[in-house]
Every structure is written in C-alpha cells, then in structure tokens.
Amino acid sequence: MNNQSEETITLDSLSNLTGFPAELIRKELFDGTQMEDNQEIPLADLRKAMLSFIDETMLEDKKELH
Image 1 (cartoon, helix red, strand yellow):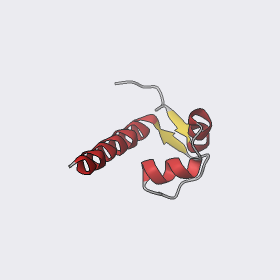
Image 2 (cartoon, helix red, strand yellow):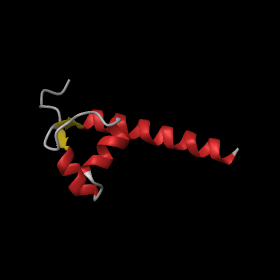
Image 3 (cartoon, one colour):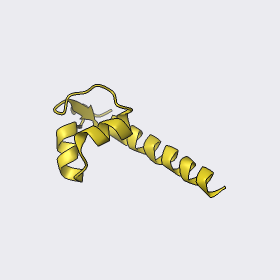
Image 4 (cartoon, helix red, strand yellow):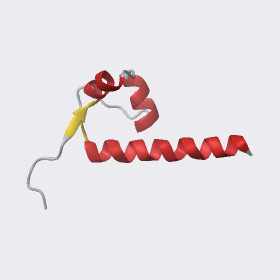
C-alpha cells in the first residue's frame, strides 16, 4: 500500500487546465454537488466521475441512434 498522501486537484485548477468553467464541471461530473472551487478533489474520485459521465453520455448516444 502507498503511504503517500492521496493526489488531489481543486475544481478551480481543473477548470484552468481544461478550459471548462468550474460550474459546468460541477454540474456534469458531480451532479451539481455543492463544493467550493478551491476544494480538494481526490484524483480517484475525479476518475470515477469522468468514467460515469462517459458511460452516461455513451448510453444517451446509443438511445438517439435507435
């Protein structure tokens, strides 16, 4: 097991890195969950949220094709 502290990123940093507004990231990845722009988000939680978003988006695209 790794003894290092868990890697994190803030919503504000993620917004700056991606070019997407913090509010959009909060809405799309975290279902509008109340969080501060400078709140630390564990990268594991970010990955999980991103995968969930991708899965939901792909399911919506498949429904539109039928």
